[in-house]
Length: 231
Ligand SMILES: O=C([O-])CC(=O)C(=O)O
Ligand SMILES: [Mg+2]
Image 1 (cartoon, rainbow, N blue to C red):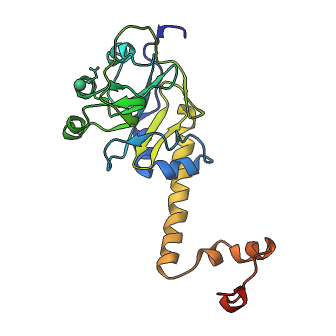
Image 2: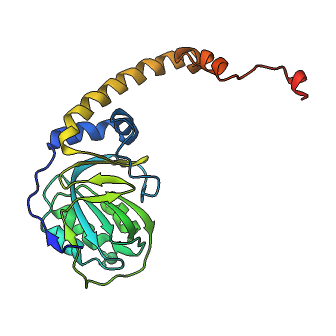
Image 3: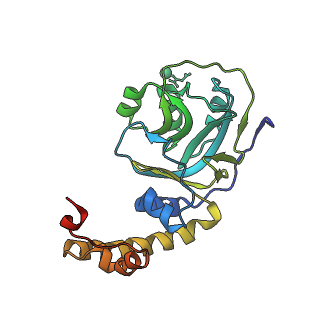
């Protein structure tokens, strides 16, 4: 671990981030070729938020939130804090006091591979959090880590300034350089799904709409009566 704090990294355009957030995590993940999803291990502490922001990354040591304190002063309006640790740890590194400081700076939310606490207060404040755990376990402020360096969560690379989108389905990262392309691809997917939804509302089957009957035949799937099957 190289202890470093990187200041003012370039960020994705916030209007573009807001457009991406509006599409939702599943749509953007699909639209960018089923990449960027940070996995089912990161869950919203409270349901019902759909946000996007630009990543400020933090690498802490397990059970140590020193670098979150260091990161706060480098946060700008529109950012979203992304915290991970040098090895897996579910202690409650983050709570309402950090959220208060971040809200003051215009930070939109937190994504962390650790645990968080003060969840009732976080809910009351309207500060959205995605975490691996809820844990009251307290932590120390002792060990140097890093702020605004590239990190990997669930195999996905997050570079500071990338777009991070989060909703009830989880969290997805969109690389800064690919944000415009992801907007176009997501809009195309929404248009396609709008047409599919209308068709389903009219009773059309996915089997016919997607040409899946032939596929079933090709795969050797046979129709048999319940009697033939012995039911
Ligand atoms: O202070 C801590 O260690 C974490 C916390 O509970 C808070 O931010 O309120
Ligand atoms: Mg607290």
